[in-house]
Length: 402
Ligand SMILES: Cc1cc2nc3c(=O)[nH]c(=O)nc-3n(C[C@H](O)[C@H](O)[C@H](O)COP(=O)(O)OP(=O)(O)OC[C@H]3O[C@@H](n4cnc5c(N)ncnc54)[C@H](O)[C@@H]3O)c2cc1C
Image (cartoon, rainbow, N blue to C red; front, side):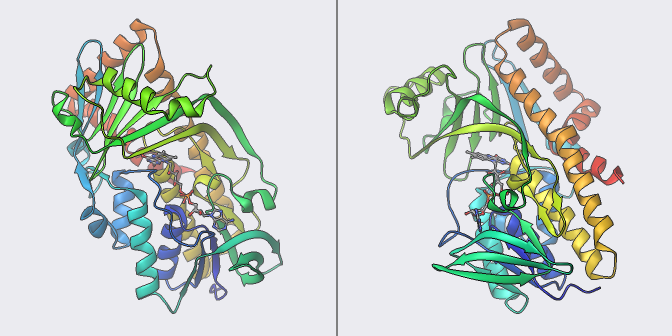
């Protein structure tokens, strides 16, 4: 049965945008609703993994995004104590992906590209609205009635399905009473961004670097205009003002790389880190995707990328429904595949990443770095490692779930 009433999508983050464009390109009407008056430009995800780039390419978005980003062909695990650098070359994935590299580009550049594409090329099929906050949903036998607070007024929009891409605090997930199971880490993460060329302070620094240290681990990520430094804070001290202060940030940056004056800090943010997965990704005609369905710590860059993979899988199933397949079994399959892979792979991998990075045991750190060095030096081990960390393996494994 063709989908004639729009698929309503709550939230124009990277996940809602991906779902909307994929569906519109397949000829399915969509209504993309963003609660804010404009697309947010906050600095959040900045790494697009190879399989996400393959998907963006099919949408026609990879090239324009690449024009605004930095291609990262190699990334590093560095041991600050010994100075050892394990460098992984994504070129080992040349047979597995059309994009054997990470793209360093801010997520807002992607959402802006997609929003414009929807408005300019798909205006007949895609309605895009700002100031439109989804508040609730009522399901009928053949559709959804969505309560929206739009430009200061209540409205009911009728659609075929509702995709909850409204982020970690999802109003839709709460409205359909889906539990968000998991836990919150005790410490917060600080991200400080500087235009200073940090590559001048380190030997052979790559664009993405995970740096272990018995006292304080950190992550160094390059975006087109800034270096972003991610540092954990002390869980015993609940004092955001301290963590965000010039004094503390300068102290940490000088500890990382001594400098004869203060670093210029153009952006700083502190946030709590969680590991949570929704109990189900499906409640009838309401489907969760992205942060509304799962959240994890940012080590490995799997949050936004996993969400884009959800949007892809869900859109694929809705396209099959549009061409006559029965909705129920396919949408249950979406839940089994994407939730299954999130619990089995993404959560496990990101939790392990964090535990290994923060271990203060010198033997654990030594063993971990030795494993990285061995894998980075061996093409077969490198490929196996990169298939996992780039999330290609998780997509292949999800396809095997029936
Ligand atoms: C500092 C930081 C760094 C990160 N780095 C990485 C990284 O390197 N790689 C990675 O993969 N991930 C990273 N992440 C995670 C990544 O940002 C998220 O996983 C990603 O944004 C999820 O996309 P989303 O579209 O599901 O949700 P969001 O990006 O949160 O988008 C949700 C959208 O919905 C809108 N909205 C909210 N409620 C409603 C409503 N009721 N109705 C309508 N609209 C609504 C919001 O305004 C927003 O525009 C990072 C996160 C943070 C905080």
